[in-house]
Length: 478
Ligand SMILES: C[S@@+](CC[C@H](N)C(=O)[O-])C[C@H]1O[C@@H](n2cnc3c(N)ncnc32)[C@H](O)[C@@H]1O
Image 1: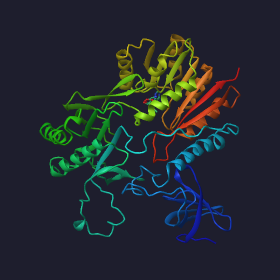
Image 2 (image 1 turned 60 degrees about the horizontal axis):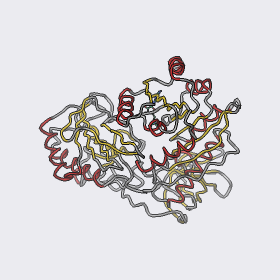
Image 3 (image 1 turned 90 degrees about the vertical axis):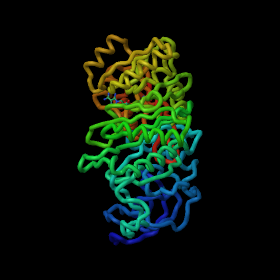
Image 4 (image 1 turned 45 degrees about the vertical axis):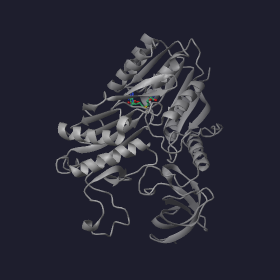
């Protein structure tokens, strides 16, 4: 018999969905351990749930390390939810990412005879992010060491933090002064902004998600991975010209020529999404550019852009390889964002139709095409749930031979899948940041024998994290 709060010792045999570690106790009962364990570790864990067939427990300590275990380099490891896999060597991270995709295809999609390729490694294991979104909160997340110290004796104030939301606790942030996934300029901008905001705490209070008062919301920093251009975007409730000019001067004195543009975005939204309604440009022209392959993209404060430039290039070449385009092909790029996949495909086919719901992204996509003199891409603003409009657009543009679809994490709406099946292109290339969505939608493509999954390539866009991207090729069965 097991009881809550009982401590047990267990060897970790596998890592499952949502980063749960799996083991089996001597009597054969399964145990799911939450915490920073690696496959092959022997750990102690404290049981918090007792069920007939399994136990759930929290990681408490390491008894014997796995051969794949390495020392995490980040002081916030275990607290910050960002890099959950920093304690595993890279070969092990890649093995687990491939396994995640393979397991989802087999267990959720029912694809028993498809072997996915080894996960494509990233060239940079740290410092690879071209965008970071740091949050301000008036509730600092306290570390376990700080929990018992009286508030007035803490080194940092408890009512101010600039960093990342604590996992599972959206109202609090961990105050960070360093992040190994960020290039140096981002860390410099983070610490300069924090120091400035702490000096001006009275005039610039932190926005509260409870009272919906206050000013400081997010600090978004972007660096063109292939151009080095650097943007700082401070998101506030209202614009304070004098204070923003002072912050701009501080940033310029620390970053010098490395600061391409400084924007103060303002929003009245009652949420903490870093999306500005108005932009006040204090330095530069409010945009940076980045390059993928032969194409240079304009990126403004609100634009979507893949967050790992070097690996985005590899992802896009993989998409092209999977699509095997012919010069006569009509291609649809569904969920096209700013049209980056469409531009990549445009030189290899007859024409491309990009479909996207966000108006500003469609505008960026059109501008990007014009700037590169690409004349065979059209972009339309359309919600992919709206079947009637898709059918009309299709009649106008022509039946696609190849559809590339890159939906958000939740995958495609069942109505959109149904429409895709009715359109019946010869090839569907499904790009996914969520193996479960890929497997679920892929099963719908294949369940009536209309399509078969012929190839799946996992790509590591985010080393040190448990996230994995995949490119899967489905072929129509004629
Ligand atoms: C994962 S991003 C893909 C972006 C793009 N393919 C790229 O590589 O940069 C998903 C895109 O789908 C768009 N989107 C989300 N829901 C949509 C819908 N119902 N209809 C059309 N587009 C949608 C989002 O705005 C976002 O740009």
